[in-house]
Length: 404
Ligand code: HEM
Image 1 (cartoon, protein in one colour):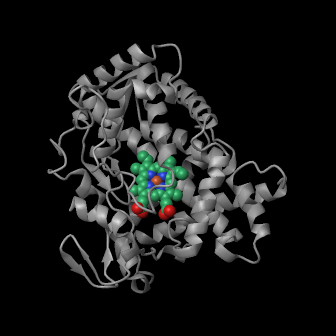
Image 2 (image 1 turned 120 degrees about the vertical axis):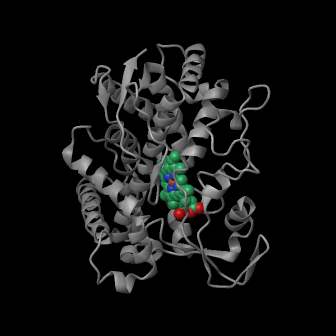
């Protein structure tokens, strides 16, 4: 199965095309294909890079947000709190800086509402209701049910981004674009009509895609980190020890610390593997009759490459169902990355934000562990059973964070 997933998304990619979701007939980044997707993906990558993606300035931006997050957690004074909202807000602020050059306070109720809509929509889209709608949009449109909430949530989210676009148009300086939205508006002027997706409607959709993709996955990974660290105090202790030895207690982590922290690297990778945050990839469709892993797949067949099967393949991992950072360490304690590790997928549609996500996971997690020990009251056990939608999230939980 592992080989099939990799074959389908990498070596046989030309035999499969992306099958777009029926929701709202969106273009955006996720749902476009062909020339438009190619152009939009290239534009998004180069624009985000020009505003700091993968650069030192991004590192500083994440560390500033880390400080705010640490202060917010400190305010809890070691008492129980719910980390989900804080993590969502902190992570979202990073992609918001790139897309709309602003961050939102943790007390901003309207922004909290947007984040709630976002999580709810992602869960519903991956639920049976979302899948039924994707399969039978004509019929489902006529029926009541939770799938209708997706439309109202998208409406509110598109409105929120639309307001930002309006504000950007009012004070745009064509010679000094500030962010992705500015750069897109300028690019729209260079294109006749709306070819290759450079239209105002698509600007809103692409911005929403970045906001959505850049928030939920990374914030959910941070939540799984707490679940597994609290359930495995020896791993949390080992991580504290490496942080104290390599960075100490006074300075902030930087990406330059990473090569000196193999245990940290291994734990983060193991959290991503066992957390299995994006279990299902987007639908693909066989563009021609194809043979994959010995199976004949006729042209037109829809396939869903399950990243889960790669992450839990017992031929690839020593103890696939157990949280074990040793999966990513060799006998000398050096970090190694097995080929079967594919949480960002692979091939031409590989996650566009992979480098940003890795930077965020490293800096946020090391910064939080440097400052706090996380625990739950005696007798409480955090569940590893996730709630599966388009992403797999932990059941809501509370933790306490004691300053170290
Ligand atoms: C731990 C965090 C993350 C995980 C596990 C993750 C995982 C994924 C996966 C599995 C895909 C689907 C790839 C495919 O269809 O083959 C994807 C696509 C995508 N991701 Fe991420 N992602 C993460 C963070 C981010 C961040 C921070 C951004 C912000 C820019 C982002 C932006 C995107 C975009 C725009 C796509 C669509 C790419 C396309 O269709 O061309 N992701 N991601």
